[in-house]
Image (cartoon, rainbow, N blue to C red; front, side, top):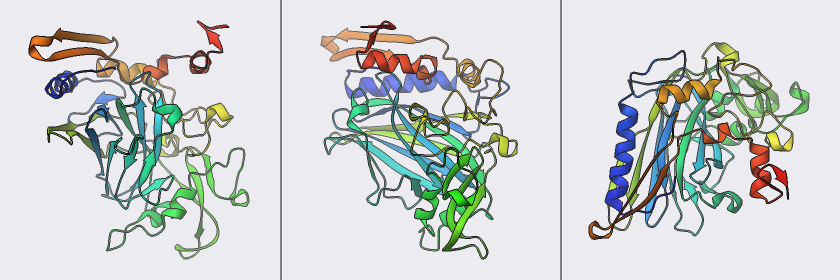
Amino acid sequence: MKMNFKPLGLVAAVAAATAGYAGIASAQGPNGAIAGNGLGDLAIVPYYTVQSDFVTGVHITNTSGLTQVVKLRMRRAKDSMDAMDINVILSPYDVWTGFLDDSSGSIVLATDDNSCTAPIRADGRFTMPGIYAAGAQEGYIEVIAMASADSSQPISQAALHDSDGVPADCGAVAENFFSRFNGSGPANGVGNVDNHTTYQLWDCDDNSQTPDTACGSTYVGSDDVLRVSYFVRDAASGLEFGSDAIHITGFQPANGSSGAMMSNQEKGIFSGDPTGFDYPDLNGGLPLDGQRTLAGGAFDTLRANMGISTVLNDWSTASERNVATDWVVTFPGQYAMLDQPLYFLELLGIVECGKPN
């Protein structure tokens, strides 16, 4: 989507888009249906912006008694590519808040929240890499439940907040998201093994944070327990609007370990690691685990239930009303319809229209 309009036009446009999703809130399907109760295992913030003086805030609430691992991903408007990608680990009934702005000259996801993240940033500031920032001043946000863990798992113990709201050991939590590709068992250190198993340094005998070995956590799929909301604020004028995200139910099959979608936060499929941060996405979970076998693919089902099988365009030019809009609304998941390796080669100028230059 590309937008160039005055603040009131922005409010009206996003309100209209949100109303359109609300109109199909009762959509039904085998999975990926729009939630009617504001809870889901997938949520989509339909628009973020840091243009001009705008900032965008996001709130994620875990309404369950299990630890939830959540993928938080900014998709840039230019082409729906992954512009910034982190994991948030929420203790039972935990709330995480953050906001996007570019007042520093870079696009930054900032949080003063104590909840653990992977990767860790001591100052709570995640700067979008410059290579991805072009065309990312606006876009949409995916919030995907990757997996849940009960209180006996080391990751849950390390992520649990004390009476002051401080997790026991976010460093140990982050170890679960290192890459252990082609490894198996504690002897190979900490990190992600597959969609439902990770390791961290922990005292496996008495469940304390004094490490004595690499101790494994196991995960199951998440139920519809996430509540996500957002706001967009013009810091100069004070104009603000916000809403609940679009919540999707049953996107992740919550049927034991086969429903979990754990991945590491270091490498990705283009570096030869198909259990990397690229997943999960709107097209499914990890390709090696084969747990996503929905007829027609997860994205096709989701797209149909969201009523976004077509792209809608809108524009307006009326100088007398102070309106100048060049607006193309793209739907979430555009990237799932691309031959991504070929697309990246075209962006680099190596090929043109699928052929070498």
